[in-house]
Figure (cartoon, one colour):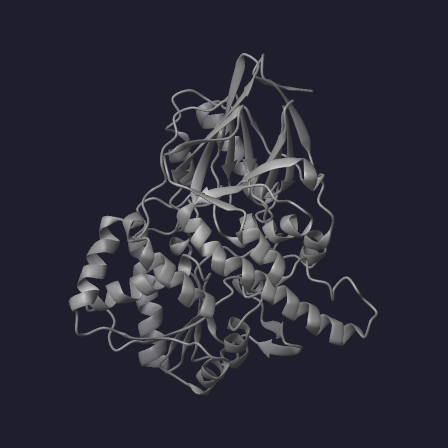
Length: 473
């Protein structure tokens, strides 16, 4: 068996792994690269495999860095099944067409700037029609249900607790008399967070792919994070007299921030909030989240029950039109504006940052991972000036990073999840992390559990000897 690391190897985005056996080939994830300047060039580049030879795709979850090149796969002729959970399939109905729309819009803008000089930048990786084609390939599978995408491959999805519908994938590949169990962690959620259930413990694997986004650091405690959220919001709105701007991923993070703001109101720690969610995609994702109430944990169910009967609720408005979005720019103080994208790379959040970053009365709340090369990362790293829509904007607003809201498990949680394995995997690949994070986490797994680990390089292919259950040189 051969395994190729075609993305999320020594980097966080672009998740894509190719597994080849004597009888066929399949992909796990097919995600877009995000963040760096060369990201779109990589997304437009030809696949590193013959699309016609792929039998099926296993998808861990809906985030674009895991799913975003499925339309390109369809554009190149792929017509096989894409297996994923039902909630993920629902979210992709929103996320994939939106991704295509953003690319088409960016390509038109680049075409106007380039005047025909740079054709590549004016070419999207795929179109809205390609996204619609990809959606027809989705095959929803329930959690904890065995399915057989090919006669020699058996699979099962387990709850990863990362975002709605996110999954750990267990895969059993049979070759002759030998069966190799491969586990793909996908993105693991931080245990103890509200709304979603904790990641499912896995007890055995021959080969393990484990994410390492925060493999080199810990999140603030949940209590300390809520304290900081309450303090920043109260101080900005009631003392400084400004706005709170929240770049948030439309799926997962927006819903969690809304949950906490309502919970803090319920506890009497915040009052008279005016919250605007300026993201059509987030509005749709919130409705999908409500549809999958059966996936909520007890805390979230309790809050929903309170919400239905409460009278002192925050003002909450989901903007729909462009005109409504533009009207928010006239609000000088008292507003919490939640908008996508979460890494500040595109979308309506850029307008709100341009209008509020230069104002010392305002605050920016960073609530999720910011990839290298993104505007969000520059803000986290303390940039004094940033460029938005061709203008240099001074950063006078206070910038607060609340990693306690991260949808990713921190180092301690990753180690705890790994600690549920009753026997060490014969080979562990540490993926989905920047080089430093992946290497530190790999070393920790070796030191504490005596695991055989490897931090693969992008494009690397390894050979697995199923009979001897080891990597071949």
